[in-house]
Length: 146
Image: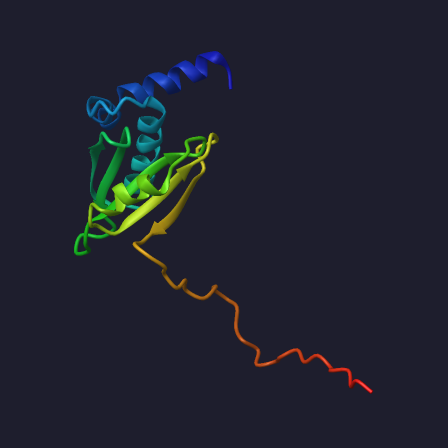
């Protein structure tokens, strides 16, 4: 990508009304605001979430996103996290104490997004898709000790 294309891309992003709104939240971390904007675009344009807004979290110097997957569903909070940023258990506690179902979205430097559901405590995962128990068990032969 040439320098001219980067400038056009950068100008487009900085002129976007939602990016400007996220910057006005004044959380002090421009990389996190950029990550929040990328997640916002994914949620609204790709996943078609409704009512997505930015919420400042000054104790983490972060923007959280709040929205609904569908019109009739409950509100979810999303914590956009640039992949190079470190977080602590205290940071997760701060986010989880907000009470809504929470998603963590890791944002890689190439703009890849990975979502993980956060919960308070342990959560049993759903079984993997397309893997069925064949009912076969591997039996090991025991050696008889003589």
